[in-house]
Length: 208
Image: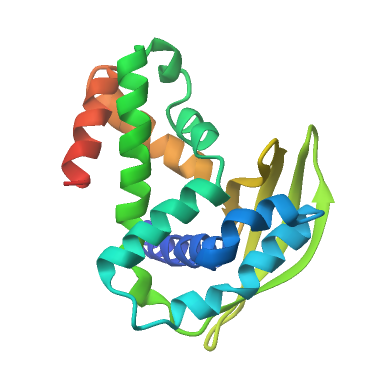
């Protein structure tokens, strides 16, 4: 197994847990971002409720997928994430292409990670601090503590919106998931002659 494949497997698992950790707690997560008084509290409050969701074996796949979609839309700045993921190609896309792409972007994220909930094996999120960065963002520092193996460092880039705090990036062991997604999507678009329709077609295929 090559280094890149090993790294991707680790990052995918860590990103999965990070997503679930931030989005867990169906009944309360919608208001958590609005009630939290600071970014650390926002991440910590959601993280504390992660285990409850992950350990709930009574939830069926369809219900879990639906909950994950709702919580992803509530906890993350999906519009910013989807726009960043295609960079300069956003400006070249028509209004219809943008709308279809953003819908498929959400479907892609939900399908990719909802299907991997079974990878959870007792990990916990430990929030260790925060630091302000340029602009209105805050980096919330944490680590995923695993039953076996060394902790995984995860930094959350959080931004305050009108509706409350939102996650705009997750950095796992120094690797930005937003940048990683952008590199992958840009590569797909370039393979299709710089046309966003190529990416849309690929996302349709992967979200069927």
